[in-house]
Image 1 (cartoon, rainbow, N blue to C red):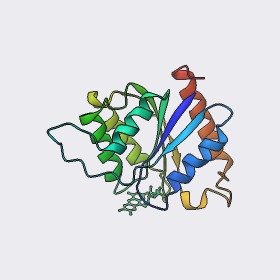
Image 2: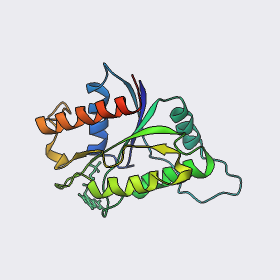
Image 3: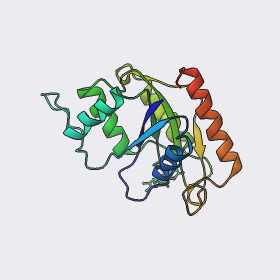
Image 4: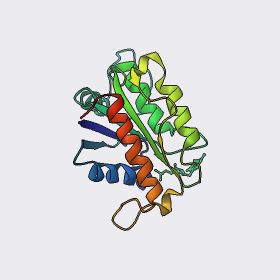
Length: 179
Ligand SMILES: Cc1cc2nc3c(=O)[nH]c(=O)nc-3n(C[C@H](O)[C@H](O)[C@H](O)COP(=O)(O)O)c2cc1C
């Protein structure tokens, strides 16, 4: 199983990036996970040419070559960060959206709700026909209190979090018959 993990922020420090790095190591026996950064991407401006910036074209090619996509979203003001929405707008306008790939939604937040509102917002966006995304309704991995959720090696410390992530990952692989 080849998955592309999108870090849903252009911030230098991010617990969502730490989460994806953990998933890459932890799920290595089951999946090859490549991590994609969304920094250095211009603001979407609906160009008449429909020509995507180079980094978006490269992202689209990586999505096409993968079996599925992981999106790790922070929560900003109860919503998905603008940097992530920007990427999704480029993808639907200039490329083939998420290319009919299954999407595993995860998120880490400093508060106790673990990006619940941002994940609901993200699923609303992913539901747009142009997004060409498949996702499991009502399922995601919510990592609350994310600043205290990892040890020095970047591993999840709370057993409940580990269990919830393992279960969600297994459900995802089974639902889309990925192996
Ligand atoms: C502009 C801004 C808005 C934020 N809004 C929220 C919010 O609505 N809910 C929340 O739990 N944390 C909020 N935060 C705090 C963290 O940025 C947020 O928990 C984020 O998911 C942490 O992810 P990160 O470590 O990948 O940056 C906000 C932070 C900023 C800078």
